[in-house]
Length: 388
Image 1 (cartoon, rainbow, N blue to C red):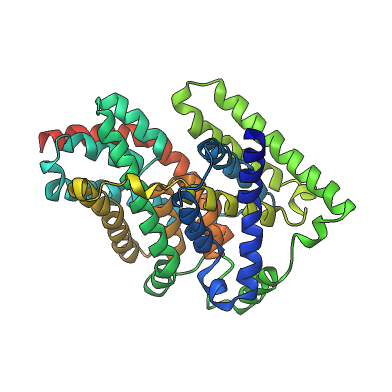
Image 2 (cartoon, rainbow, N blue to C red):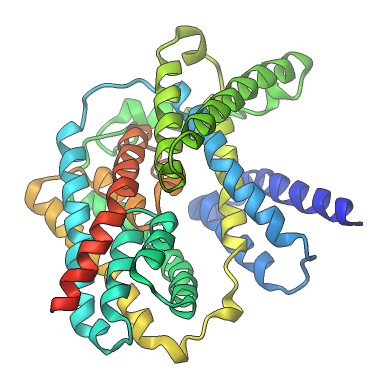
């Protein structure tokens, strides 16, 4: 029975995105909402209906950990790299970190001072919103934060991060493209040729040819190469201290994926980007299903919730202001904010939502730097807030 439940859950998570993609092409309103938002909504429903078997957490962990490492190389194989947008990338990286730090300090004066471990919480928020969950866990140990506080931050972070992503996907991307410069990517309102190319890519059926003998063999070669890259990346990362695993792992995935893109035979392989995107769609519904809304004690933790809201949305507002001042590209600003707030695994999903491949590499690069700097920044912030 356990094996059957495993098979049903894995198959369900892997096949639902196919149904959603089909519906988004057939139903106009769903097409406007987009598959990412639809999958997030379905994921939250699945995770909170209370009918899932006991194997659910294990399946969620397996798929959420596996999908992004598989997707990153696939999405990079067909990319063409140049120095376009280097200025915006550097500025987005720096202003993103500064925005998070300033928002955490502001939130500390409004909410943090009244929290039992306010300075330590500020340090943890700085770490998690410049790096990721791995930095949050590391800072918990470094700063000696109690388990209850750590669990509450994790729980509220799920809710606040979902609200943040929902805002970006619903109106944020379009709003910032009107307010800020928009010069990167394959999808801008000023570039008719790019719009036509993107519409043609969206209207085709990239997976249809894979359901043939020749297509299956092609898919096998593509996935075989991807698994080899994932294995090599994990092997190198395991040779170093565990605290550096995620940083080295993503760095290696990105480096090997970029390296393969310069091999003409790999670069020209069809549908690698689309297959990588399908893994991201699976990741979206799985991650959303992990949000257990019943565990959120909103009434008992309004101060902590307020602190997280200021850290997330305050940093976004500050980053928009910096982007306006320094003329940073809108999509680069968004991808930098997402990689800081939600961590690098969300970069491919947001790049797809923006229909902009050009921000994929910058987003992952910023994310790796954030992972590396998160622990240092978090510790320094906790010490600074302790003085204040």
